[in-house]
Amino acid sequence: MKTSSINISLVSNTRGPRPSFRDCPFPVSKFLSIWLFQTGLPINPTDGSLSKFPSSETIGSKSKIICNTYLVTSENIAHDAPVGYAPPLTRDRTANINGAPRRPVPDTMAPFSEDAPLLGASAQGAERSFIGIPGAPAQKNRITSVVRAVLVAAIACTCVAAGANHVAHRISFEPHANGIKSFLGWAPDGLDVPLDPPQVTLLAACHLVPERVPAFRNAINSWVKAAHDEAGTKRSFDKVILVDWSSEADLWGETARVWGGAGIPTPLSFYKVYGNDGEPLKWQLAKAVNFGLSKVTTEVVLKVDCDTYVERGLLELNPLQNHANDRKIFRYGDYRSAKDENEIHINGCIMARMDTLRQVNMYDERLQQYGWDDSNLYDRLRDSGAQDLNITRRNAAGHTYITHVWHPHSEMSQDARVGASCVNRCAVNRLERYNPWKNQQRAEYREIAEAPPNIPGSISFHSYRGGNLPSVLETLGKETSDLLETYCKNSQFAAAKCYAWSDWSDGWDFKEELDTDKDVRWATEKLKAM
Image 1 (spheres, rainbow, N blue to C red):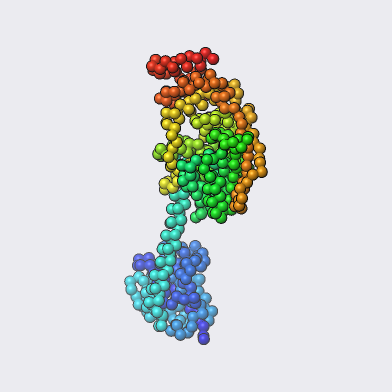
Image 2 (cartoon, helix red, strand yellow):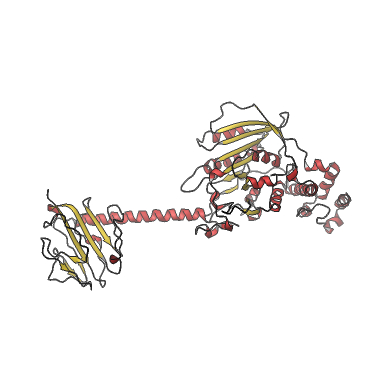
């Protein structure tokens, strides 16, 4: 088989249509490389790659097609060309493939003249369209062009989809979130150090009751997904700590079934806690969470509830640090930013550096009944110089990163919740004036050798006993506690009492309440006389 090399250049002036590589007369195969110079970009149609970067002379208003064939058999062309014929470096053309002198193309880029035919090409306005070399299948060229166009369109669509996905997962317009700044590479609030999953532990403390089991299943299944990277979105943590605070339902069985069967490498540490003598402990959020915080070994903790839904991508929109490392930041689920009533319940979720939490001695364990334990922590963090930011719940596409799993609530009425929070708030504000929590000792625990059989390899199991510590009401005494119960009994007024570290001595007195409720007036007078 005889091999040949041929070069043909087509130049059009700018008055007519620009030539297309479909005008190239040679069949596109592995023996053919077509360089399309359109505004100076050479493209190899067989794989879509750039063959080379052209010189500046080829970039401009002129269009040029160079068809270079290598190892083309003599049967595919009308005439043989000298083997090793090199592509011209200047704008010229070969008028006779058998070796006739080359005829220069004027710099004016004028149309070809009829007295110098090029392989049977016919003049059509300002453009010369190749009819083709004998034996070159035009249909194959058209099919190749269609395939190439489809491939280019598919690549473009993939790029657009990937870009849209990136934008949707990066942009959020929640309060204190990145907004469009994140897509442009600007850090929100000057926090330019991204959080990495190895820095973060997810912590949840539970007193699981039977009616909350479905909500817990939804939550822990979301944690399984959030522990994986996917589609360019980072996982939200690298470790999990789950505290079982004397649950009534089988929290261990639910956890082992989901986490142990998920086959994920993320380790989960399970801690089962009972009283000193093995008796069940009443639910006390501050103690339970502090116990879990004492086991955290990473720089950052993401504290959630056992009915909190978490998704991957949470860290990207919630940075905590700048490069100067001169700011203290904590993020929490501010109820004022909730989109609906359900989202209000992530007010207790917080993400912060452990050194920031340790500086204020974490949660105040003297708060042992419902209410104000989260808000008290946030107040003390602010007083320590930390800046509060909202945890970003959703991005611009509406994708949820963290929210509350709906479930039937307890029988405690809203009025009772408001009253209990008022009692806790007034009592702890009183204690904080004379005995700040940051100087107090937290509850103590001891580990015992007790574990269930068949513990999955991805879970470590620990049993503890302890947790004794006087509550804020026990510290103040029964008389004061009883007076506070009366002082806060009317929820419409109790909701506004004892804010900004005030207590009953310098807080709001509501004349309307004092004039209409003799019991509240009596309790207020007794408290102020103390």
